[in-house]
Length: 237
Image (cartoon, rainbow, N blue to C red; front, top):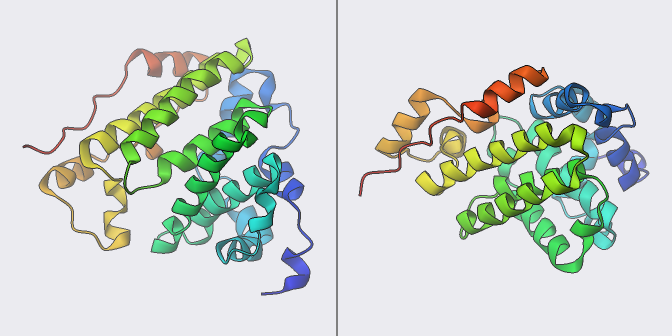
């Protein structure tokens, strides 16, 4: 790894990349495009080209000192949770940093770093890291995600409430999956896990929250929220 590259980077460089001052927060459709670009792979090439070495350094614990400040913690969570999924896409490494990212978020909630973040979109990406992390107490963490997702509606500007209703709805769908299966079954093949019969049925349907078709217009978003999807069937007792 070329230390001359990643060691010169600071949290602000990550945050300026992920949360650019493009005016995305001015209306529903611009903010929706901001979300879709990040959640549907639109940032992948830039992550690999600009932040590949930085992501490796974070995975090795070389950026842990970033967590000393609220914005440094946020940048580290983004690298561990979002950038790792791009850099190691299709391999177990994509999920290998989930536990650390979730712990950083929970610590940030406890020490006030989470509340210190000024923008709802910044807080929302912390909640995504909590939702991603499998393991013990995952459902309890998802309940925390839902409580805080709802709180984001009160924090978001009125003009963006529709966007954060979508965020809340996406997190609700993820909670439904965890309530049904206790894990994210779409990861089973990558992680070499055997799927249960109920999971095989769910996988065959393919209605995964992270692949849900999110419309780009206000009218489309309103229609989507008017017809919430059916929760997955839990395993038979």
